[in-house]
Amino acid sequence: MLGVDLGTTSCKSMIFSYDGNILGGSYTEYGLIIGKEGHIEQSTDIWWQNVKNSIKNSITEAGIDGRKIKALSISSQGISIVPVDKSGNALMNAISWLDGRAIEEAEAITCAYGAQSIFHTMGKPVLPAYVLPKLMWIKKNAPEIYKNTWKFMMGMDFLLYRLCGLVITDYSMASGTLCYSIAEKAWFNDIFSRFDIDRRKLPDIGCLGDIAGRVLPAVAEELGLSADCLAVIGAQDQRCASLGAGIDRGMATVSLGTATAICSICSEPVFDRQMKVTCCGFDKNRWMLESVIGTSGVALKWVKDTFFKDLPYSKLDDMASSSPAGSEGVMFYPYLENNGKGAKGAFTGLGLHITEGDIVRAVLEGIAYQIKIHIHSHEAINGAMRQIRLFGGGAKSDIWARIIADVTGKTIIIPGTHETANLGAAIIAGIGAKIYSNCGDAFKTVGAAAKTFITDPEKHKIYNEYYKAYCSSNEKIMLNS
Image (cartoon, rainbow, N blue to C red):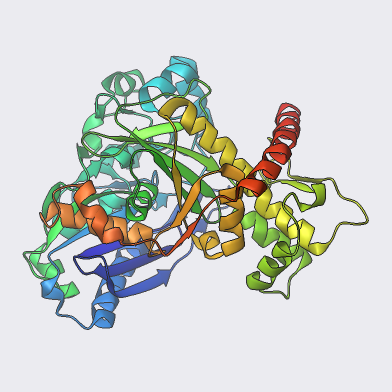
């Protein structure tokens, strides 16, 4: 099974055996195109070329006959959009999900429907990053491109089209458009009429694990695949990563990377009245809830680069381990987004007695407190969570995982592989190829936990007191933002 992960600044392809073992993989980095007006774009030619190269290189590394790959699927960055003409040519660069040019269009959507109404239908707040505001921006500012567009495609849609010639997206990718009803699992026609957008320019919608088609013969020959290789509809990368981590009812997945996404599964659409936890489509019978800590791993990187530039992360772990639970009263609030608005990051409780270890541990604890806040938000609308499956770069830190276990009171499971997005895509490929009957059957490929961290009752008791103080100050910071 082949899982392709199209990220924001890199592409990774990995080949897995049916039991989830990695046979080979290839990783390629690429950049963003920053325009004069701050527009953020990417070249779809670079997407496609890097995907092709990574597939070929992963086959070489695996040392297998690529024609033995039965199926492939894609984990993709969400809500980046590119207009494509009837000949399959991109009419401009893809507008990245990081791009915020469509501010006026987002405001028009809010004025027309109201923030609560949109959230209740689409499961998302109204933001310029989503697809519909970008379509409206193109229609207004580049009318010829809009007129000549055959289909607007997101990352996964574009790659599937190049692989098998079919234009189709899935529930999770469609959920990032602001024009998809998550309950109805269909495009929301009223919004197209309201803003004079041609719905026929959007892809058809399928479910992850459905077969899109077979890899086109010419493409298969170029990549070293069989022309019988199945191209299976994938999902947005965070959904794939959660799947690859083994998400199921009664647990949450936490991706401890540059930012942190907290996800949980529900059996029907669930809407958070406070609009903090978003909801998106997942598979035929389930939806996924998500909330985000904007700066988590990058906050630790900032502390390292600013105060401990010459030290490796392992040394920071040692320093944090030398500090007691609660970091001698130092608390860290990781609101470091440089967007000119919102809450500001802070350290509190500093004094002359505070050590380097207290500072580092406070950062790890601050993120753990934020994770607990988010877990509580999920539990309030989706029931109790018995465990957290933790993955991403930060999951390599044992001390951080222990802190999260002690702060949240949840058992922390570190999956057997950190390559959860690629594994999730490969699992989806396996479902399409009937190797697995469903996601539950496929969980055996996730394998045994690499590590498990059980809550220390004494430390949990200590952290509960610090958590109360943290939340009190957190509310003040948020109110003053």
